[in-house]
Amino acid sequence: MVRYLDPETDFGIPARKKTASSLASRRQKNGQLPREQALEAAREQALRVLDRNACSSAQIQKKLSVAGFEPQICEEIVNRLLEVGLLNDREYAAMLVRTRFSERGLVGRALIQELNRKGIPPALHPQALAQIDAAQQDERVKELAEKKARTLGNVTYPQAMRRLASFLARKGYSPAQCREATHKVLSAMEFDEY
Image 1 (tube, rainbow, N blue to C red):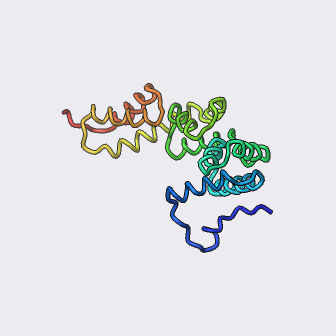
Image 2 (image 1 turned 60 degrees about the vertical axis):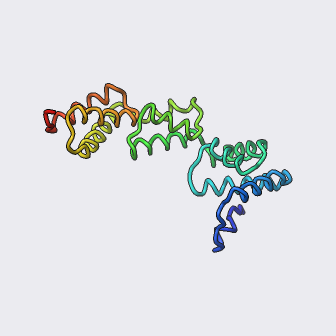
Image 3 (image 1 turned 45 degrees about the vertical axis):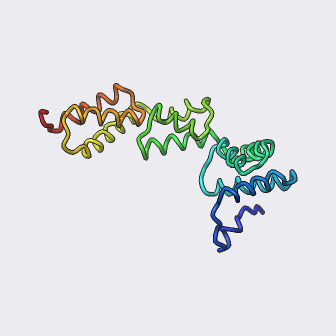
């Protein structure tokens, strides 16, 4: 049976604050463990992280590295988790794209930045991004533009144009999509002449 409970937090014992000195001592301790014990400790830490949330293999490797485990140990644990299917960068990338698109309306460049931030290899980007088609993007950009336009308040037409277009551009939409959605939404609103 797999044991990956943290005795400091799982048995009612209050967790200690992680100070720089306690992290440094934990790193030193992990770096000095014999190989078998280091593998077991790294595996338990990786499983504890995966229990909380999904991660890419790069994120797990970084967390283990920061914890002070040797690079060979980190790589071996990540490879083993990939073999047994607990880590899958392709599925993680697809899930990340779907959730960021549905929750925050991100597309294109913004999604690529998010995938890079999570350590997803660039070779997996096109397949993950292919889940979102042009019709979905057009519908979502219109929804976002309408929602943002309601919050603009008392501004002139040029101000509203700039604010709305820059908001949509930060979400990763192309200039043509930003321009079209902005014109459609703002044409229905009334603005001061100056």
